[in-house]
Amino acid sequence: MAHRLKSSFQYLFTIDYSPAPDQQSYLERSQSQETPIARVTTAVLSSKESREYFGVGLARKSIQPVYLRIENRGQSPLRLYVLDIDPHYYTPLEAASLCHFSVLKRFSAFGLIALLFFPIVLLIIPSKLIFAALANGRMDELFQDQAFPLRPIPPGETAAGFVYATLDAGSKTVRVCLYDTGGIGTEDGPARFHELLSSPHEPDVDLTFVIPVPGIAADYLRHDFEKICPPSTYITCDLAELGRRVKEMPQATSNASGTRTGDPVNLVVLGEFETILSAFTSRWDECETITLETCWKTVKAFLFGAEYRYSPVSPLYMFGRSQDVALQRIRHSINERIHLRLWLTPCRLHDRPVWIGQISRDIGVRFTTKVWNLTTHRVDPNVDESRDYLVEDLLRAQRIDAVGYVDGVGACDVEHPRHNLTGDPYFTDGKRAVIALSDVRTSPKYVAWS
Image 1 (cartoon, rainbow, N blue to C red):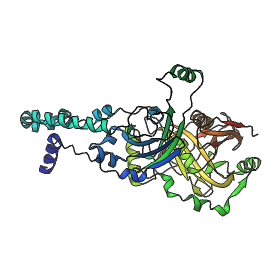
Image 2: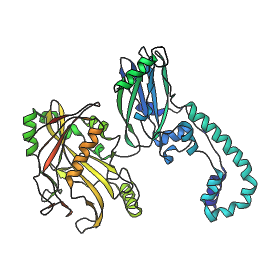
Image 3: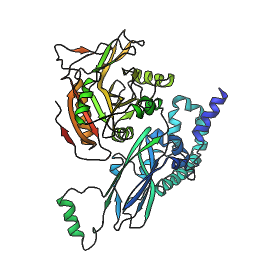
C-alpha cells in the first residue's frame, strides 16, 4: 500500500521531460526510393522510439511520427503534399499540445483518492504548474524544430523532418507526392496557374513505401511463402489458362479436416505480397496471431464494444491450411468489420503470384454451439456486397490494373441460401472478382471473362 501511494505521489507531482532526439534507431528500418528529380528516404517510429525521441507517449494520443528526407535533384522547387501521407495529420503544435503535462488533470484523474494529497497540493501545485509550463514550452519547441518544413524545396537542396501522422502498427503505407512549383510567383506565374487549372495536375514524383513498424505480430509472419509455393511448383498461365484454373479451384472454404464447407471463395488477387500490403494497409489493418494475449484483447473489446484494430480472425481452410494472409476493416466496434483472407496458389500470370480468397462482412454477434466459446460473428448474407466493396475500394485508390469476374461457387438466392461453417446463411450470384493489383496508381482496365 505504501509503495502504491508513493508511486501515485510521484505521478502527481513529478514533471520529468527528457527527450532524446539523438536516439535514431528508427533509421535502421528506413527505406529510400529515387527518381531523376528527387530522392526520398522515410522511416516510421514505433511507440517506444517516439516516446524516447520526443520524451512523451505520442502513441497514447494516437500520434505516429513519420520521418522524411527529400533531396531535390531537379531544376525547379518541389513541394510535399502532406495530405497524401495522412489526411488527418497533426500540426507540430497540435501534436505537442495533446501531449502537454497537466498537474490539474493528473490530480482530477485520481477522483476521491486525490483528497489524500490535497493539503500537499495546496503547497506544491504553484511550483509544479511553473515546471509544467516550462516543460511544455520545451516540448513545443522540439516538435516544431523536428517537423518537416512545409515549404518548397529549392533545386539542389534537402529537407528533412517529421510529419505527425495517425497511429498504425504492423505496416504503414506512406505515399510521398511531390509537385513542381516552378513558375508560380514569377513572371510566368499566370501561365503556370492557368495550366494547373485547365488540366488535372499529376504529381511530378509519386512514391509509395510500406514501412514495417514494431508493435504487433501479424498473422502472415507465421508463413514462409517460398515454402508454401516453391518456385519449382510454379504454373505459368496466360489469361485464358488462368481463367480455367481459377474456376477449378475450391468453391468454398472448409473446416480443418475438410469435411464441411464454409464461406464462398469469391476473390482472386494477382500481385506480389509487397504490392498487396502497399495497396491495402493505407486503409485496411493487418490481423494479429491468435495468442492468449490477443484473445484477452478480443474478449475485452467484445464485452465493452470497443475497437481492436488488429484483432485475430478465426482460421478457415483451403489447400489443407489456414489462410496465409488476413486483413480487415473495422468500425468503432469489434463486432462490425470486413474480413479478407487470402491463400497463395502456385499459379503465375506474367510472373505475378495468384492468390485466392474469401471476403465477408460481420454485422453483429450471436450465440452458437458450433464453436468452443459459444459466440460467433453474424455474417451479412449478401456476400457479393463485400466482394464488390473491395473492388470499389481499390478502384478509388487507383490500385487496380485490371478487374473481371469468373464463375465460382455458383448462384443461390435469398429464398434458397447456403450456410457457412457456423450456420450463417448467405446468397450470391456465384461469381469471383479477379483483381490484378498495380504497383503504382493507375487507371483500371476491365476484362470480360464469362
